Each structure stands twice: as structure tokens, then as C-alpha cells.
Length: 414
Ligand code: PMP
Image 1: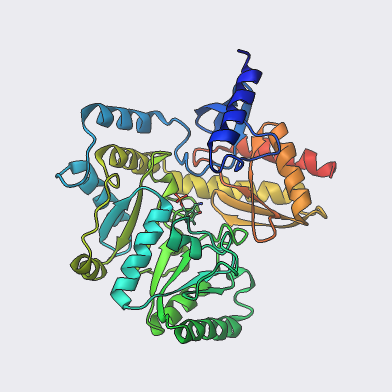
Image 2 (image 1 turned 60 degrees about the vertical axis):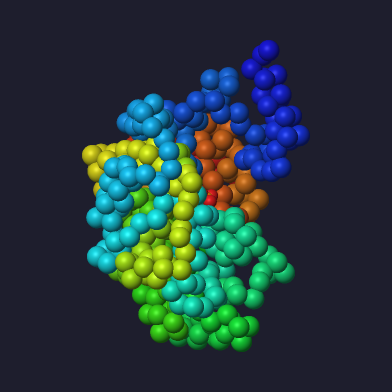
């Protein structure tokens, strides 16, 4: 069977057997069969530079992570009802990286599960049920977390315990308006019988169009939420593990301390593992009422992957690296295409960069052409007009140059 026939066969089976088989990237989906650091390879051996994949945080098929998983899988994998050093060692490492007071971990398997648990914890502690999210947020796909994800959950599907507020793009010009609006939204929640339990935000505001907020945005909202009786949840599924440069966690840019932090995606470099971190007081209140157990969450293999990822970030200085390469990336993008009429803004932080284009059609065309030229990027934002550049953290200056050259070439033909 030729490789091309094989690809067609995979596509056909996918469409007939998978519930969500049509959820693929590009008009003509890619058939990727191998990964190596920042590179992906299709069935014909064509090489693509991965400028999209934040899950392969320390590089596709990173040998330290692969070895850690393989060795632990060959020795033991079981649930967390037994003592095991991997889970406590990983919890300790995560807690050491957090601000003081955030000193208790729960482990789960996906970002959605972590956010679902965070909501349960916040509801338990506050005794309330309402939740505040940003207007185009995405936090996951469980029944509850779908509600917290207006990017997918339309207004007609939305339940009365959810209220939305704008993302950080217009802050601080309209600070008073933000405060009044947030207070009004919380009043509406209350009138529906849902006083505020939590405010949750992705701290690089990826689905809002990629914004590192001005410090005061989160600080003001956190103070207000506290005053209104809710807890603050930092969703670090996108912005965590040094992605935004300078700091390990996205919320640190804003000098705030959340009540609850959720982690996921890059945590196991592709192995499913996620976590919720909170204070001992909040955890004790939850543990008193619920006996949380998760069959796969925090198993020895998943935690071996998590430990190897943390070690790589530390050994390779990837937080600093994200800042240096990310700054160079933004500078080069501005130089090459910054004055173009089709580009409206270049923004972000570290290795999480958004290039806002004039409209969705131009963005889609650019994303497709980049793929044809061997470069994989994403597309995001409420208008889907932002190119998402979020490569593995091992991305180098030479890779930035490849992307910028291609973008420059493509944009000349738009
Ligand atoms: N939070 C954010 C900010 C996300 O971007 C995502 C996934 N894109 C999730 C949560 C959900 O994570 P998962 O797909 O692992 O459930």
C-alpha cells in the first residue's frame, strides 16, 4: 500500500469511526507520523517546523521524558491509593515553584478535569455557585467547564450561573467601566440565585486573541472578586511552565496570588497529566466534604513524565530561553511585517505570540500557505484573525528566522 493510499485510508476510517473525526487542521489534513524536537514529519517524509505545539513543551519525543516514562512503565503503574515517591516528589517541585501559601496539589489527567475540580473546590469553600469568565474564554469540555468556555458555549446554551466580562485588551483605559461592569455581572448572577464562587482566567488570554494583560487588570479583578466573596482561579494550562518567559507561571507577571491554580497540557510533554494547586485551608474544607479520587491522575508513569519535564525546564533554563527567543521573535516580526497593511498588531510574551491580521480570511490563507511551506502555526481570537505562534520551548533563533522569512514572503503575495 502506497503512503498516499494509506493516508486516504486513515482519513476514511477517521471520518466513519470517530465522533469528532472532522475536527482536523487545514483544508487537506496532515498525516503526521513522527516528531523530533521542533520538527514533525508526514508519511512522505516532508518536514514541518512546529510553531504551534505547546504540549511538546520540551520538544517532541524528548529523550529524557521518553526514558522516564518507559522506565517507570516497565517497573510499575498503578493508582494513587498506595504510597509512591513520584507523586509526592512532583507535588513538592510544583509547590516550590508557587507563591507561598499555595501548598497543596491534586492530580488529574486533563486541563478540563483540573478546571472542573477547581470549580468544585471553589463552590465548596464559598458555598456559592456563580462563575465569572472572560467573553471568549476556553477552559475545557466537561459539562460544567463547557459552560465556562464561551468560545464554544453559545449564549443560548449558557446556564444562569455563568457571567462574562471583557478580556484585558482595552484595559486600563476603561478601568472604571471594568469594575462597574464586573460588579453588575455579579449582581445578575446573584439575582439568578448564583452568588459568586469563582473568577477564572487563562493568564495569556489565548482564545481572547493572546494578551499578556497589564498588571493592574488581574490585580483589580482579583481584589474585586475577593470583595464580592469569590475565589480566583488561574488557569495556567496555556501560560504555565515558563511559556510566557520571565516567570514559571503566567499570573506572576501581574504580581497577584490566586486562590487556586490549574495546570495541564505541557505538564507531561504529551503524556496526560494535570493538576490543581490551592491552599491548605481551602483543600481541607473540600476534603472534609468530598473524598476526591482519580484512577489515573498522578499515577507513577504520569508523574515520571511530569518530573522529567520540570527537570528539563530547569536544566535547560527554558524560562529565560523563552524570554530571549520570544523577544527576538517579536522584534523580527515587527521588522519584517510590522508595517504591512494586513497586520494590525504583534503581541504576547515569551514563546506565546499573536500576530493579529486584518480579517479571518487573510489569516486562514496565511496559515494554509505557511503549512504548504513547511511551517505549522495556529489561528485564534474572537474573530479568528490572530496567528498563534506557540512552539515547543526548545525553539531556537534559527527557527524564528525560518518562520519570519516565510511570513515575509507570503505576506508580499497577499
Ligand atoms: N484551559 C485552557 C486555557 C485551555 O487552552 C485548554 C485546552 N485548550 C484547557 C483548559 C482544557 O485542557 P484539555 O484539553 O487538556 O482538557
